[in-house]
Image (spheres, rainbow, N blue to C red):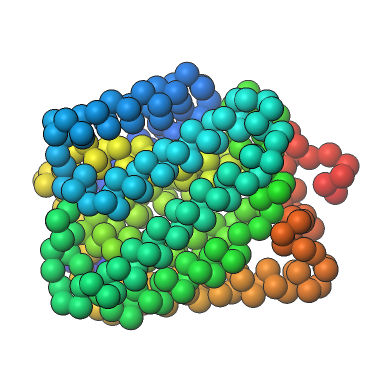
Length: 316
């Protein structure tokens, strides 16, 4: 069955896709709540995978692309850094807890922006790259690269990152609110559609839905932690297995130019809107985005703090 954005739908394929989302949510929650399980998932497994990759035992299509390897291990670096913030008291109360998360997130976004430009300038005609991905550069790449730049400019409140007062000791970025997350989701889905089109339903939509569901229903205020963990889990799976050759993973992009263009336009409009709202808040409340959290006046910010045992009189 063919749709506007994706094609190859089957009942089996949809069930497997939903199962992938559910599995990512479960593994994220299991590793979020137990540091030893997290150490196994994000410490031991990446080392084992790296050894197997170097030895040539694992030789998936994703491992043939520099971007697939860099993306996976940068996500893992983020998870490990977040674990240090969460479980090492001194680190959680230091400048590292403020600087590292925003730096690793910015790097992640910049990697994708670079990839958009690479696709635009390199693939002027449709070709299949070394990782088996159909690539075609077009104005959609430039539009979504611009959306990524606005996304970078809209990151606020990293100086307020704290460790939650609960058993799971989550890394809480209270100022990273729903509208920024939605803008990121739209940008990332457009990026995946533009640059890893064959796998966008899995490496894009599935992971984004998984971490966003975790933010809404599992633990508010810890979106970046959810994002890094689900991305790292899927990245390792992608490097280890050629899932795109499996019969149950056949939902792929429609390769319709209108779909490419529409997704990137939506992402750009959303990110410009979030940036404009941030500028409005800066002007109205006279806040410094480099030194202050921006959205402390919003109930969604306060709910993030309350959900993590961090709400006190100073936040009201």
